[in-house]
Length: 260
Length: 347
Image (tube, rainbow over all chains, first blue to last red; front, side, top):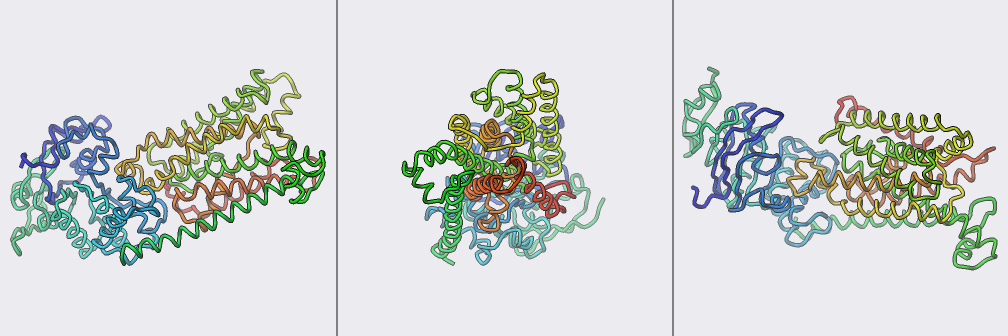
C-alpha cells in the first residue's frame, strides 16, 4: 500500500497535559478507501484524527500527498483535509446553505454571497449528495439532529478535499440517518477520497469500511479488512466483549453480543 | 434546485442587507446634520449645509465648522468604532453578550489615560494620552481572553470582565485618591463620565488615526468570524489562524476603544447594543453584522449626544452617563433572554 499511499504517519506521538495519548502510531492509507477508526472510549481516536489534520501538536512525521504536513500552510492543509468534528457545533443560526458554503473557505471563497461558479457547483453537489437542498435557506439551529448532521456532512463534502476526517458523524442519529451518513461517506470514498471515520458502532464499521484501524490505549493494535481487524481476539482483548459474526451480501456482520 | 436558483435566493437576502445599510447611512447623515444644528443657537439642516460649505454668516460658519463639527465627527467615529468593536468581539467569542464595556476595556483605557494625566506626563491634548489608553485597553482584553481560554464560557467571560473593570475602576480611584490637586480630581471625574462637549479638531486628530486603524484591522478579518461560527477548531481546519485572529481583534478593539476613550472618557454599552439591534434585520452572520453595527453605533451615539443637549437639566448630562442608563437595562434584558445559556455556564 506504501507505493501510492496518500496519507502516511510515522512514529506519531501526542502528549496532552503530560499524558501520552498516542504512542508511536504508524499508518499508511490510500485514496479511495473508507477507513473506520475504532476503539474503546479514551483510546485516542479523536486525538489521532486531530493530529492527522494538524489541529494539535504531535511528534513524528505526517505526509499527505507526498508533502510533509509541517511544510504546508494552514490554508493548504485545509484544502487537503476536510474535518468534521463531533457534535456539529454551530454558534449562530445561519442558513444551512451558508454553513455548507464554509466548506469552500479554504479555496478562498470566504463570502457565501459571492461564490464563483466553481464554488457554487461544489456547494450544490454536496447539498444534493446529502439531500439538504430543501432546507437550504432554513437556519441550522431550527433543524432536527438528523438534518443538521447532513448539513454538517455537506459542509465537509463541499471542501472536495482528498482526505476527509469525520469524528463520530453518526452519534445520536437514528438507524436510518446512520446508514445515510455512512452511505455518503462510502460514496465519497468510491469517488476517490480517503475517508477516515471515527465510530463507536462496530457493526457500521464492519458493514461500510474497507479497512478498520483498532486503537487501544493510544496504540494501533490491529488493522486490516473488517473481519480480520475485528477478530475474536481483538474483540475480547480490546473491547472485552464477544460478538456474533456472520456475512451478509458479501459484507462482514459483527454484532456486539455480550461482555466478558 | 439548480445552481442558478441557489444564487437567486441569496441575492434576495443581499438586497435586504443593502437596503438596511442604505437606510442606516441616511439615518446617520440626518443625525449628523441635526447634531450640527442643535445647541444654544439652533440652525435648520439647510442652514447647516450652507454653513458647512462656506455659506451663511461668519458666526454660523464658526458655530458649525469649528464648534459643532469636531463634536459630530467624534460622535460619528466613536459610535461607529464602538459598534464595530462590539460586533467583532461577539463574532470572535461567538457570544451575544460580548462587548468592550463588559470586558472592562474602556475602564482600563480610562485608567491608562488618568494615570498619564495625573503623573503630569501629558495634558489632555497629547498623543501620550491615547497611547496609554490603547495600551491599557489592549492589556485588559488580552488578560481577559487569556483567562477565558480557547472555548470561553459565558460565565467566565462575564466574571473576568467584571473583575477587570472593577480593578480598572479601583486603580483609577486610587490615582484620584493620591492626587494632591482637587481641581485635577474634579476634572478627571467629569472627564470619566464620558462627553463629546467642547471638543476641537485637535481631539479629532488625536483619536481618528487610531480609530481608523482599529476599524481597518477589524474589517480585514470579517470573513474569519463566519468560519468561527463552527467553533475554533473547525475554523482552524478551514484555514483560519485562530491565534493570529484573536491577537488582531484584540489589537483592533484596543486601538479603537483606547483612541476613543482618550478624547471622550468612557462611553459604554454602544458596542453591546448595536449588534443586537441589527440581528433581526441583517441576520446572525457575524461577518455581515460589522458594517451595520458600526453605522448603528454611530447613530446611537449621535442620537445620545443630541439628547443630552435637548434634555432640560440644571447642569449638563454627560453622554456616557446617558448611554449607560439606557445600556444597562438593555444588558439586564439580554441576561434574562440568555438565562438558559448562562445557567449552564456555557455559550
